[in-house]
Image (cartoon, rainbow, N blue to C red; front, side, top):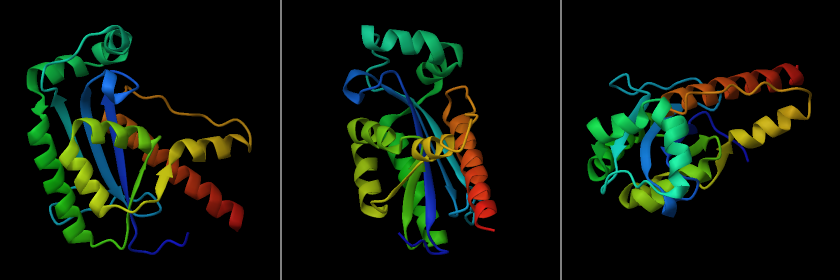
Length: 194
């Protein structure tokens, strides 16, 4: 696959209460845009970042599948409380995300908008299950290729010990980690080519 200078990476992360979308709730979504080397791209408003805490339509479903996740990481990092008290509804989340993405596409006019992240298919599955109209929009404006940080980390591990940065399991933190590790990987590849 050949990339062009106008290809753009759309980094996506979600925070959820379960592994499978049919068994839990979507609590947070975040996105970033960078060039193919991981450098943030500013739109005319200066924004390269988007994130929203989401209030599930019927509140947070506490079941045996979600209890461990909620009372582990998402209770401790404050996401459950924030979702219940000040989260944006699902419909508003969709409209705000589409508006942000439309601006990104209008300003950057990428040849391809390539979804990136740690296991981005996981995030897309949750978006398809809980935010249908956003999923339809993404299907219509993104390339079918994916930049999966999990694959890059596994490849780097073959070269020797690879330190994987841990996060607070909030989208802003996870996206910053992913982009930072991606930039480091690009640097390693460039150094190896020289």
